[in-house]
Every structure is written in C-alpha cells, then in structure tokens.
Amino acid sequence: MFIQFELFGKPATQGSKRALPVGKGANRRHIVVDSCKGLIPWRHYVAAEAAKVYDGPLLEGPVMLAVTFDRVRPKSHFGTGKNADVVKDSAPSEPTGKPDSLKQVRAIEDAMSGVIYRDDSQIVKHSICKRWGPKEKTQVMVTTQ
Image 1 (cartoon, rainbow, N blue to C red):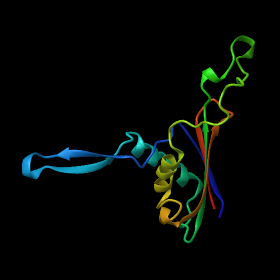
Image 2 (image 1 turned 45 degrees about the horizontal axis):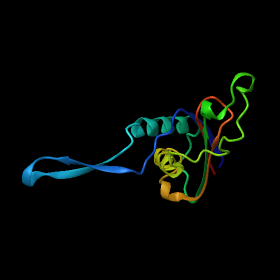
Image 3 (image 1 turned 180 degrees about the horizontal axis):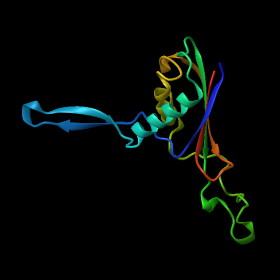
Image 4 (image 1 turned 90 degrees about the vertical axis):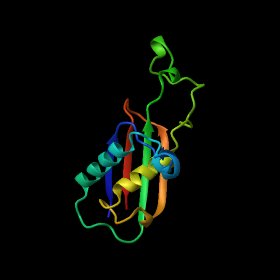
C-alpha cells in the first residue's frame, strides 16, 4: 500500500519535554508537557491530511515511512541586484540548523497512529531528508508503504 501526501507550514517538533510544578507544599508534584507549543495543532493537521488520502483499514504489520522536509532558503543565501535569484557559493548546500528532523518525524509518526497504521511502533524503516526546497513555502512530503 503506497500512501503519499504533502503538508504545508512549519512542522512542529516532538520529543523535548519540560516539567511544570503543580500544587504547593506536600501536595506539590510535577506534570510533564511537550516543549513545542504548536505540537497539538500540527498533529491534528497531519492526521486530517492523512485521512484525506487514506480511509481504509489501519495498516497491520511492518511499515516504511519516508519524510522529506523542504526548507525555505534565507534571503542571505542569495546575491543582490541582478543576482538576487542566484545562490551564493558560500551558502550551505544543506540545512544543518534547527529544528531537529528526528523530533519533527516523531510528531508526524504519532499523528498518523490510528489514521494510517495502528501504532507508530510498526514503523521498521525510516527515510528522513531535510533539504532546501525548490518552493517559497516550507513543505513536508510524507510517504508510507
């Protein structure tokens, strides 16, 4: 089964946590929450887009997941004037800065659980690519087999 869809916008990350104190004195405890404020809306968006392209039974057995993150090049990577569309030789060939692509994939995996496959533990093979995209908007291509 080959399933593919595109996502647009800034992907949220999942993985970093923070502990928040709740209560006072002897009743004080901590709850653990995700650090990324946009995680829940992003996961809802991913699940909705996945559901648009697949409405069959949840996949059983091993799953392969390929995710490509196309990032927008900063304006500083381009020349000026007549060279405004030309990438400078000094510009990096690949986006090596934050965000961490593994944390972005975790959010996508969890969002697709219960929509495409039963559980993200079924994923046995990953292909993750973070690159400078050909378009002016950040986009993510998700492919499941």
